[in-house]
Length: 461
Ligand code: 5AD
Ligand code: SF4
Image (cartoon, rainbow, N blue to C red):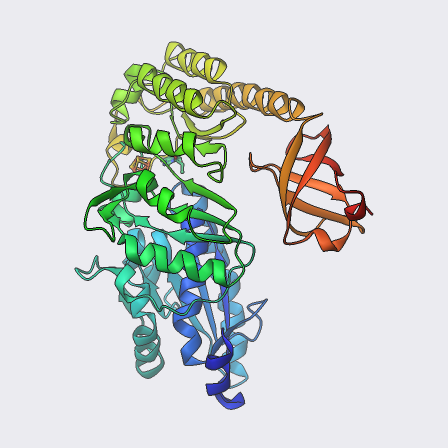
């Protein structure tokens, strides 16, 4: 909340808002924007749900486990809501995000004490929904895909995000991969206009952010009219963002291999501040399964994109998502995935067992893979990916890397930041490092992080 807003809120109408977030970075960003739209109504962030006037669960529907967690959390919150009511207070309980979008009515059936159910496209209408819930007492449900764009309706005033900030530039997906709920929960691809993106980026930098990560379900499908009236793609947008004075680092996530165009690859070549780390999910290394997944690229297409990217930016570190046990996946298909991993050499990756999502084409496919086979394949894939991550981290030892320090480390006297490759880097150093990018000599590699010594003597502990 900024000072102007807080001065208009008196003590008596100050309310406490607790938001619990699951899932992707888009949800993290959306949670912050929900807090922004509620700030003018007097809601200030609360660390815990105890005694909160409103609790929002911002949910993820991507896999079954993620969705089930929401219902167990709701059970716990029900007790808090009841004890609040026994004290004469009221806790508004809201379910937002992709579970809300996909299972709106089901939530109210399983958890009738929920007051609000809202899909990701309707957050700008949250104040109105809160007012309706407060008046009516009954549940309010809003999971439409409204014609007006959510992007146009979010407030300009946003709480500062700190040294590293997220900026949503694109939402939704039209790709309809066989296994994925995103096209159903987030709707069609929508790009935020370039001028709005640039204005928010300038504001974030003015508020102290040194690193911006552009977000979108399909961020590299971003396409909009630029301030020059021309059609811009992500490569062009990155060039414009790179000119903002004071901004040090740019990243974007998540990308689809099909949308890695020449201009975007050239941005990796030409913009030193575009960090050499790219999350580019491939899902499988088997052409048969990629076709069944409706990915619209082959393993060779993916390898070719990687080759072009590495030609443009030789130190580029790659990350990916994998699914094992998609319907129809044989041992030979899985072997093709391992072969692709060996060829690419990933710096890190996420891998999942296929989880049937109701309403998606793969959920109804006949050739479901046995759980035991999924388990075994996941373990084998993860062992290989861990090995590659360890090798990548070990390869950083002895290098001097610029690290953007963001906060205190786990132990007293430690400070932590991120390398260009997104690895956490711990150093023993002065708190004066926080908020600066400094060269660090990497001394040791750990499974998920690095440690080292700042080059500048005065910054050491
Ligand atoms: N089962 C397992 N993993 C899934 N993902 C998406 N849908 C499913 C599913 N039904 C994974 C994909 C995607 C990541 C965000 O989650 O790998 O890239
Ligand atoms: Fe889901 Fe595929 Fe779209 Fe990614 S590209 S959000 S996996 S449908």
